[in-house]
Each structure stands twice: as C-alpha cells, then as structure tokens.
Amino acid sequence: MELATVKLLVEGQGDYAGTTFGGSGSIIHPRGYILTNAHVVYDLDLRQFYNWSGLAEVYVTEDPHLPARPAYLAKVVQLDREHDLAVLRVVSDIRGRDLPAGFRLETALPLGDSDTVQLGDEVRVFGFPSVGGDSVTYTRGVVSGFLPLYGQTLIKTDAEFTHGSSGGAAVDNQGRLIGVPTAGVVDNAGKVGYLVPINNAKTIIAQVLAGREIAITTRPTRRTVTLYVDAAAQGYTGANVRARPSIDSLKVGYLDNGEAVAAYPDTVTNSKGEIWYKVFYQGRTAYILGSLLSEIPPTITDPEDTVVILQVDGGYLGYTGANVRERPTTSSAKIGYLPNGALVEAYPRPVTGEDGQAWYRVKYDGQVAYILGSLLREPASAALDQRAFGQYRS
Image 1 (cartoon, rainbow, N blue to C red):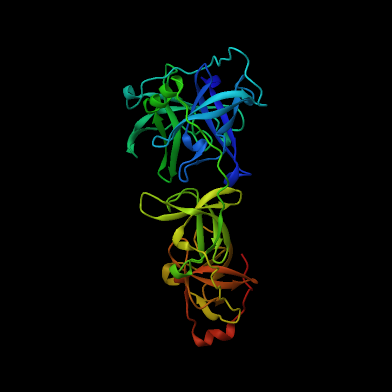
Image 2 (cartoon, helix red, strand yellow):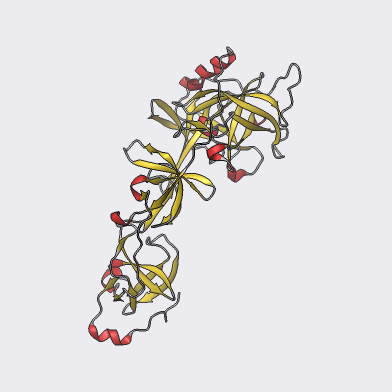
C-alpha cells in the first residue's frame, strides 16, 4: 500500500510562477493512472490549473525507509470539481523521455466500496504530509462518522493527516482504497479528518479507462492588480490574511492599513456570501476580506504630536497592570508591562483590534504598541506631574 502512494509536486506557471504546490496521490491502475484531489493540481476558486499543461512530478517509494525518488511526469486527464478529485496519467519519465514499451505500474491499489463503510471501521492513511519529510507516512484510526457537505457525504476519521496528505490513500483493513484524504479541522476541542468516498471517484476513473480524457489548453497569464489595505472605516488597523476565504480559516499573516498587496481581479464569494480577494502573500496565495481592500491608497493620519495622557487602571478588573502588545489582540506578542497607576502617551482614538475589542495605540519604549482599552482611563490631574514615559520594561 505504501508503494502505491506517490508524492506529487506541481511547478506553478503564469499567475502561480515561483510557487510549488504539493500533495499525494494513489496509483489506481497499472497503465499509470493516479488518483488525487483536484486542489493539488487545480485552483478550485479561480478554476485554472497551477501548471498550464496540467503536469505534475511523480515521486515513488521503493523503500519506505528512504525518501521517495522523482520518477515520472504525469498529466491531468480528468477533473471533478464538485467532489475535489482528479485523475492523472503518467506520460514520461522525470526528464520528459518516452516511457518504455509495455510500461506498467504494478503497485496499483484495488478499489473498495465506500458505501459499505460503517462507523468504527478501521482506516489506514498513507501520504506525504509536509511535516513528515520526503518519505511516505502511515497513520491509522477509525471511521468517526459521516458529514453531508457540498453535495456529497464525506467520511470522518480520527486518523491523523495534515497539509501535503491531500490526495493520498485511505484504505480498509483489506488494503482496498475507500477514500481520499482531503481536509482536516483542528481546534481547541480536537481534530477530525475528512475523506472523499472512493465511490465518488469511480465515474472519472471509468472515463479515463475508456480513453476519455480532458483537453488542457495553454492560457496566458492573468495579471494581478495592486490593492491597498483600508480597514479604518470598519475600525480596524489592518487586515488578516487567511488561508481560505473565510474568517474561520487559518490566519497566515497580517497587513497594516496602507500596505499594498497583489490581488487577482476576480473576487471569490464564499458560502456565507462574503466577498474575498485572492492575493499573493509571502510567496503563497491566500485571501483577504474584500471590504478591507481599496483600489486607492488610504490616507494614514497619525501625527506624532497628537497624543493624550492615559493611566493604567486594571484594578477593578482584578489586574495589577496592563500588558503592552505588539498588535491589537491578546494573542499577540507581549513586549512590555505597565503597572497600575503608570501613565502612557496614547493616540486619542481607540481602534477595534483583531479580536474585536477596543485597543489604544500607545508610545512605549520608543515604539508604537497596543494596550487593551478597558485597562486605561483618564488620569487625575495630580497624576500628570508623575509622568515617566518608557521607564517600565518587560
């Protein structure tokens, strides 16, 4: 089973130039057919292939103790966006040379019947998660339940898999392929993985075995546009950058008001009706809520001489002082601490932070930082003679 699981790498072209996309796949037929997730090779939001020709490098395992080796090039020959599935066919060796006569891959996995899967059944998962290095990774668990979602019923499992495992193999205790690891959710309550049932893939598998393959045409680069973070109207100091177009998605970065970002001109509307822009951020594609972006650079007014004096007063909340944060959220790095009674220079208008609370931007030790607004108050006039800015350190 581990020998039937391959690592896939896709070199981006055009809009995706300079980015390598990775995932896993399963050899499903000796003629060189590989099953994977569509999102490993294809942008489901913008509906375009990462590589103009639909090509992917295929890394195979000969010894599970060793890293998988680059062996072949494969091309996408069928795509099912609805179920997030794709079938690739090996077309050459890794250097682009013709395959030998009678080429076969003898490690193909037999297909199971996902309609017979029951709660509590054993599940074994094979793939190439990014945290597992370049050798195949095996985990196991059980079927934890079923989730109707987007027109199909996904299989839930407690078997561990992470980014890079997408498109790999989920097999039963008889070694039959029953699902494709596709996504996982992790929060404070725990984690769960989702498998696309193998029966959802049987239509496109039958199509390729019958010789029906999609045609992929080269397309020119879709140029990005420059947009600017302009969240002040909503009371924010900047915009979170998310891995997916949802505020519940993983936060991968943060851009301050006024910062520029390269964005695709087409917006993406998620299931909640929110409009998001797909953007380039630190060499990867991510998403920013559309209402936080503008075509015109915002005017950032923050004159150094416009400050007020506020006093730390956390006593009524049970605090002896206030943490000074790098960003306006309690999860941000603490860069200092001010005890109750300390005075601080603050910009007069509080902002709504990343956590939805009111924060003050303050001057602290020669830099601008943030203190939770509920921990500050206007000082008594007598206290103004006791100012000693920047004397407190973390």
